Length: 120
Image (tube, rainbow, N blue to C red):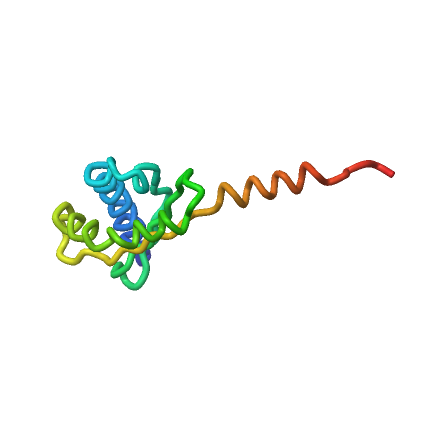
C-alpha cells in the first residue's frame, strides 16, 4: 500500500479566516472612522507556526503613513475582538501591511506605454 501524502494548508485556512473576521471587525467597529473606513483587506499570510498573521490592505487614501499609524493604534483592540469571534484556543498576533501591488502595476503599465517600439 502506498503511503498517503498529507499536504496541510492549515496556515492558509487560518490566515483566510483571520482576514475575513478582521474585515468584519473593521466594518462593524470602525466603519465610522474616516481613516479606517476606506481600508480593504486584500490578503493574509500566516507565519511562525500560525502564531502571526500579516494582513495586507489597500486604501485609496493617499496618506498611507496616517492609515498605517491608525491601524497600528487599533491592532490591540481588533485582536481582542478577533479572540472573541474565533473558535480556536490560540489567536495569532496580527500586523497590517500596505499592499502596493496596484501602484506597481500601474507604474509598469506606464513605463511599457512610454516605450518606443518602432521597427527601425
